[in-house]
Length: 371
Image (tube, helix red, strand yellow):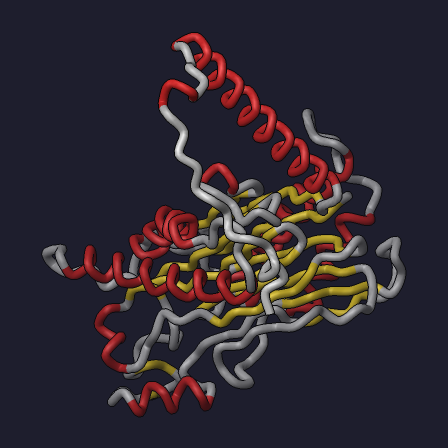
């Protein structure tokens, strides 16, 4: 029953126009100015609330190192956007910060990787949930899937319009941080690692494919000060044609896998671009995972497969931790001691990959997580 059923219906009273209060032009202008002042005060209050929220969030700082190796061309591309909010028209009411980091590893040329680096985050911004969005996780999941599909379709359209048609392709590993929640979207064989200083398992993880080879790493140390034993946990998946689920999809589409490659040529089973293989079961659907940041997290690491041809997941994390903990890092002008260590760790890791004999391009992004 309606709580207001017992109230009498309002009566309509006819009032002659002459009895109504008369407003002047000055009164109307004064009311307009008052409304504007109130709107500005509301906006300032909203911004102040967001600033307070930001103070409670982990501080993210990104560092990148790129090496051409022995390749004739640098086919990797990367994007660092610690604050992506300027790209977004609006944010959900409960979101204060959005960050975006990505590595793209091209093959057959650099055009697909560069296209993805230039366009994927703009497509993401257009599709990002806005307003008082409920079920934000599901909306972000749909947004990421739509973004990858749109970016792939846009590149394939441009590639097919060229004479001769472009045959470039690219893997992608993207990290989207919404306040303190990390969303990882990857396709191909680039990887992500995450260092955590406690043994709390990450929250729910999404997966688009069942039990594919895990490739991104979450490193944890037993002690909160980062001095304990490091443990590595994967956060992304490698997509190659030798994996059962990937091979089955390719074969159902009429393709084949020979010598571990699609049609004996392509090493990855998911990518942006590679238009000539899309009819053979190669898709642009990323694997999606999410994990929540904690006060004990140290850093996130994204890298192309060039790094992991000469480094294992555990070796990568241990190398970075050793540089962060050693005391002989040369000071850098304009950087704090901690920033200098992260910068040095990123650069030294990429250089060490080349020194160990990696002939491929190497790109490493290191994202520090602080208070």
